[in-house]
Image (cartoon, rainbow, N blue to C red):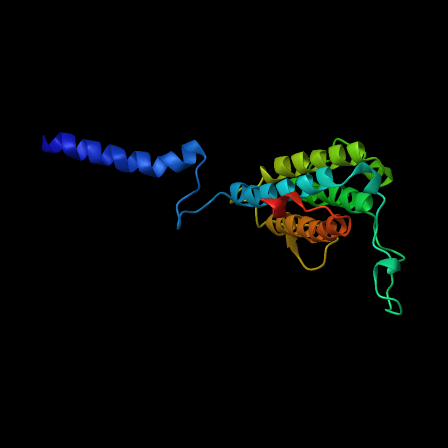
Length: 195
């Protein structure tokens, strides 16, 4: 009887430790996560928020950019190089291919230079979605052995695969913040804020 109880207890302990990994649940605090899983979970967050934003903006507003006309008369403003909403989204798509191409050392399967010329909502939404799919594939290549391997990058400071993955996520969040303001200036509540 004692042997059976101990066997059941051992089985429950093994199941409880293996369960989260096998069912996709959140890992236990204090366990060590795979770099690919940790970065991918953060990429999921920005992807959901940004894709919600680009889908929420009306197609006819993709050419919108803030202008001096939005501010109080006499207030000094400079908006000559401000990106339109479409340009913000296209820029993130291009940057995703750039950063995650270095992370994975894999060339994109699309013409990245063509993205900046896109102006139609459907084309930009598709390009951005494609860039996030590419980013997920790149992040999947991160392992404990290569995550902090130094790579050649035009970004300042020394860069590793992991720091560039993190920078790509931070970069997307930066532009998402700007796009949220564009949505609000057009009377649209960002989907992430409406939850």
